[in-house]
Image 1 (tube, rainbow, N blue to C red):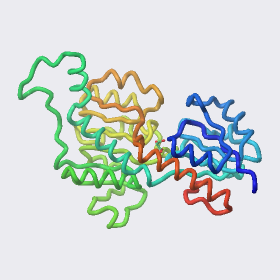
Image 2 (tube, rainbow, N blue to C red; image 1 turned 45 degrees about the horizontal axis):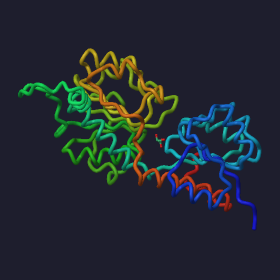
Image 3 (tube, rainbow, N blue to C red; image 1 turned 45 degrees about the vertical axis):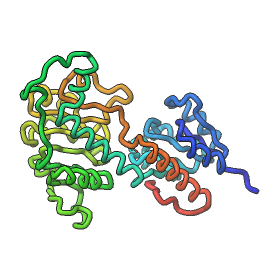
Image 4 (cartoon, protein in one colour; image 1 turned 180 degrees about the vertical axis):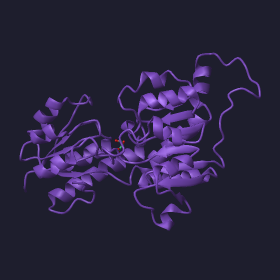
Length: 321
Ligand code: DGY
């Protein structure tokens, strides 16, 4: 019987995923479940044929250049792959995969939570009660914005964007979107396509970001583009923190140009942005879009499916490089 391939799993995964991995691979784990340093990643990868990282581990061009010839595949436990230099991986002949589809429902749920939390002042109300400061009620108290009947703008109508649009329709919202290309009618289900970002922003009472992080989308939410939104719009970001110029966002939240923001992702993770955290009109979560039991199992199994395919000599289903 051939020796099982050696696999580095960089973070602690769910028990069922770890058990399946241990059945089929010689697994090197991260008992402390902390983010490995750049040097640790390079060092641990010297011993393995494959690595299963999360978005918390960065495979920049210089890290990839330092990987051994024996390492053949980076099977990510994430749909986003902005933490991996795909061009460098391709040059090095390393296969890269991701875990699409399985986290769309969970992430769309978090987009709805962020939207409602921001619109209805969820964090403010919660903090008030916890601090023992709920000593008043009146019809003018904690009045927020209703989303029913409003326009839900989707930037990036991919898998997560489509599910978020579906959920927003459940709130009686009209869906508007911008994507590189319009998506087929049966997927868009009556959503209104805008061929420019400006057109989408001008028609979004809530703007929800669902595009990948690329050089083109970095900072796509900035002082100029926020200006295209209707006054008192709401921004939702469950995609990647670097889509947003956070100083411009703070300015817009302070000036009232934006009514509120619901954010699950930040430029600085973990940690966030203290200027944003100091504001009342934000609803904040610590990058938990895909953090459900079902989804984390499915992401782990999907990453293992990709590894299994590779080591069986087949094309992995979710190959991105
Ligand atoms: C993803 O899959 O890209 C999520 O952000 C979690 O890593």
